[in-house]
Image (cartoon, rainbow over all chains, first blue to last red; front, side, top):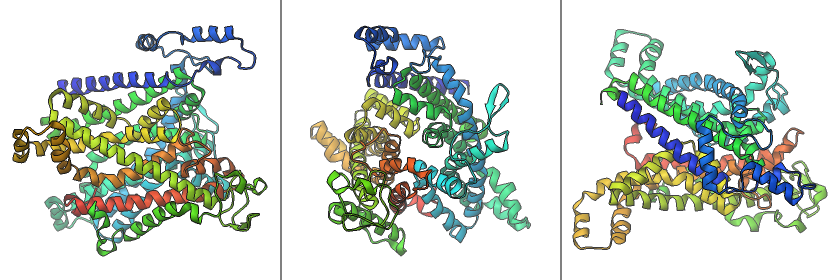
Amino acid sequence: MTSAIVGRLSQALLVLLALSVIGFTGIHSVGNPVYNVVNIETATAEDIRNATIALGLDQPLWWQYCRFMSNVLAGNFGTSYIYHLPAFALVMSKVPATLELATTAMLIAAPCGTLLGLLAGRRQGGWIDRAVLKASVFALSIPSFWLSMVLILLGAVAMGWFPSSGRGPTVLLMGQEWSFTTLDGLRHLALPALTLAIPNVALIARLARAGTAEVENQDFVRFCRAKGLSSRRILFRHTLPNISIPIVTMIGMQFGGMLAFAVVVETIFAWPGIGKLLIDSIQLLDRPVVMATLTFVSVAFIGLNALVDLFYAVLDPRVRLS
Amino acid sequence: MRAFWKRPERGRAGFARLVLAAYVLLALAAPAIAPQNPYDPLQIFGWEASSPPGTSSGGGYVYLLGTDGLGRDIISTILYGLRISLVVAVTSTAIAALIGVTIGVSAAYFGRWVDAVLMRIVDLQLSLPTILVALIAIVTLGPGIDRIILAIIIVQWATYARIARGVALSEIGKPYLDAARLLRLPTGRIIFRHILPNSIAPAITLLPIELGHAVALEATLSFLGLGVPIDKPSLGSTVANGFQYLLTGQYWISLFPGLALFGLIASINFVGEDVRRSLDPRSRSHDA
């Protein structure tokens, strides 16, 4: 067990290291951020040279990478070129907003998806089953940016029920600002969370449907039925626990995916999370912030995946023993 | 590939096939049937910008779906955007499949450290969310149609490589390959003429599904302003252009191109699902 954990973690670390080299080389070979730092109209050639030296851009790339890595190991991602704040602290200040969004979306998606999957899988080929399968293909086909826009059009422009952008009032709780504690904050949360949730409802429903269909044909379910248990009790007390492991896995993996996909949704809803920060920073060539954000998302995603793998091993005796 | 053209059984995904065929025809015929050429400034009337659907134009036709913020006919931008979306997706999916399968088969054939290194790279890629890989790639490569094709290839090749390697590994133990080796055929010939054709089938089932992903990915990157250039908009960038007009109620600029995009991806996905199901007997009973 311990060797499995060590093996899994060292593999994850190797992935991160490789990623940092690729990402660093890529991001540092595009554009010249000096022009976003100095005032282009008034800057003299000397100003530009000084700024280049101040940002360390006069050094060769491999040296910049070594310096970056040694700083990162000391917990320092450098200072944002634009905001003049420590890059990592800047990213961390945006994390709660993204976490709040992703968690809300998952709280919508997991129960809805599981329920739909159970209902669909219980009677394979029935009208619920066919409707869920069809709807899931549609739900997985909608590009998330267009889904956001349709929801804005319906919920904000046409009906006026929900605000179309921003985070609304926040309340300080445990040292962080949160939206979900106020009614207006919840209204701001509704549309972006729904956008993130809809494809995941479809994914989870398909997974739950496949699991249910398999479990419902097994002997113990037939026995339950013979015993005269109500079909609702069979579904929730006997089938659901048996299909829960893959669903939990999927939830864990998709949660990491949401952190990454939040890029699109946050950009559209002007949700002040790490996704919007990433896109803004890419466009402004704010390299330290781009590196810090990408590192955070990758670590979170790979960490979550490793956790899910380990969790799987704990839950499923077959994996644990092999 | 034959399964794609096979007559659909019991009308399964038959409608989706029809829609997809219509999309391809429309894209091919775009210059002939579009009311105007949205890339030609001489055919665009700036004072007719943001006209609602049904307005008649100075060019002697009716803007059935309205015009965008620059005065371009929405139907025409959809038709021309469709061409770009499809060209980008088809090119990148085809090249990604070719590269991926070749790499997967080579990894299986050479084994040892080649296999280990290549498969670690595949693991690295598949352990990250696609949008993240695409963002890193496009930030590195810069904007432009050729770059976005390259970015999608970078995102997709790994899936094909993993699948092709698995099949190729089981092929390599077979007698006909021992015979090929004993005949001292050149390595390239063994890989491309003997192993590859026998390991390509499962990768082909993936094609339509990955094509749908490619369309969505290109649209998303273009929407974020990191994709195709603005003067030659794809469906994704057309939708993006309309976003700023959405809040003022000019819904048609982004709604209709988005609807076209959604229909395209959905029809590809329905067909892809059907192809996969009919080629994979295991998933015929319980499709996950």
